[in-house]
Length: 178
Image (tube, rainbow, N blue to C red; front, side):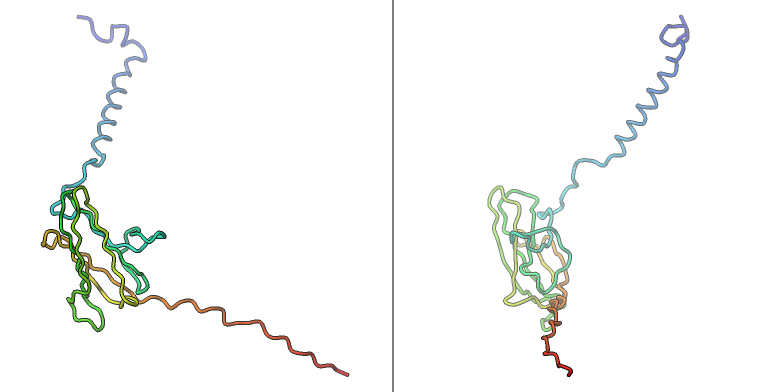
């Protein structure tokens, strides 16, 4: 049986071909194994995602926000369900630590029943005037069972910037020197 070194393919520079290919295959396999899986994690309950948002320039729910000011009107609570089946979704806005309000008081409660094929609910809330600074919590119920909660602060808004208090001086008549 001839040795591999005697064949025409393995003479000269071709001898280094297989080790190089082997290293390339190992490197590619290691890179493929190091990538994160494309599959999203399983959802335990009926709520896939819930977040709070300010209004965008069109007045719709914008990007996720973690805190608000007393001037942020309205505040949105966006709920994405794990299922496209109809469901009754309720949001209770609870005053956790708000001056003048007993802790645990339900400030607002609203309910929406999704239709077949819907899995997103946009709740919005607006006070009669402005929000009272403090800590609030949005409790989300699906089918009557609490499924998610988000606690968030509403901070006192900075005072509006005052206008320029300096005005040009009125010209005075010149006194004549004789």
